[in-house]
Structures are given as C-alpha cells and as structure tokens.
Image 1 (cartoon, rainbow, N blue to C red):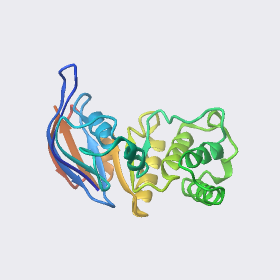
Image 2 (cartoon, one colour):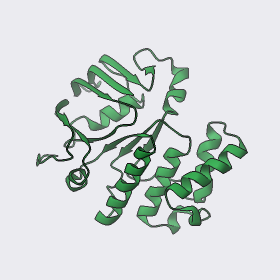
Image 3 (cartoon, rainbow, N blue to C red):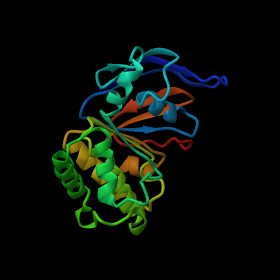
Image 4 (tube, rainbow, N blue to C red):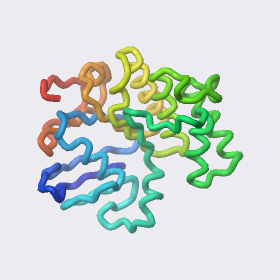
Length: 229
C-alpha cells in the first residue's frame, strides 16, 4: 500500500514540486498517474522509491514509514517495488537470462530459486524461447518485456512503470499495457506513469491526474481529456 498524507516537496533550487498531495493506492490496485511535464509525477516516483524525502507530510510505502526509515532499511523497502523504465536499462553484454539472474543474485537468491523464478517470469512475458538472446537482438517491445520480467523477478508487491511505452509503436504499447494488466490480475499492484491518453482511455482503470504539484482529479473510468497532459 502507498499512502501520501498532505505531502509537500521542495528542492534546494526553490522548485515547489508537490503542494499537499494526499492519495492512497491499496494492495492489488491498478492506477494510472497522468499529468503534463513538470507537474510532479517524477517527484512522486522518487518519493515512493526513497530517492528523495518529503519536505512535509507523511508517506508510507508497503509498511515502511519513509519519514523515519533508517538508511539501512531502504534497500529492503525497495525490494518490495519493481520499477520499469522507458529506456529499458538492460545490461547489453548479458543475455536475457543473465539479466534476470543478475537481478536475483544481487538480493542473495539461491541458484534453485533463481532457476525456478526466471523460468516463470520469462514464460509470463512470452520470452521463454529467447532467454539466450542479448538485448540488441530483440525488438523494442521485446526489450520492454525483459524489463518487465526483471522488475517482477524478485516478486515485488508493487510494479511502478515510468512511461513504459514511450519508445514503442501503438500496437506494441497496447501489448505492454495488456501484459501489465495481466500482472495486476495475478495480484501485483501496478502504477503506470504515462502521457499516452489513448492508452489510458482504452483501459477502465483508476486515473490520478496531477498538475502544478496538486492532484486535480482521481477516479475510475479510464478517460481524461486535458490537452495539457
């Protein structure tokens, strides 16, 4: 569960990125976070991942109080999250299988756990036949599927997808969103940050719209028409 309670965030350069954000994302939810550039979306993600701390207000992430969390516990909190980036951030010299096993070795998983889990997530994203390929041998859509598999491999309770379809054509974008929907149906909380109105409108999900550091709307229905987003 993610909970923001009257959260403000100001940066050292004077930018007031968030101006009293309050929201709650419950376990098992699927939500879109939308808004124009500079609206505060990236700051919300940085707060959730403890890259930055709130200036004011309270923030809870998957049972951790990020106002008081000791630095030594931050890595444990981050393991409850899987983050998917627009630019994939795969290790180019490693195979798809090695990219995933590396992510599990970092957290101390056993060889038996690694073998079982990697096979499962590769099948889930439809890439079990391409485990030995390197990222540069895959299409953009396939590379994003690898990035999703990597985010899932340590079994996080929540996936954060930051503009996951920004580098893909409309058909591949739809496939990625349908995959994220499937992952959500299997029990993982999903938060998707996106500018793509057409995709948001296609899925009847919760839409949290932010503008100028404030939430301007929050509800179900999968539709928004603000031209600035």
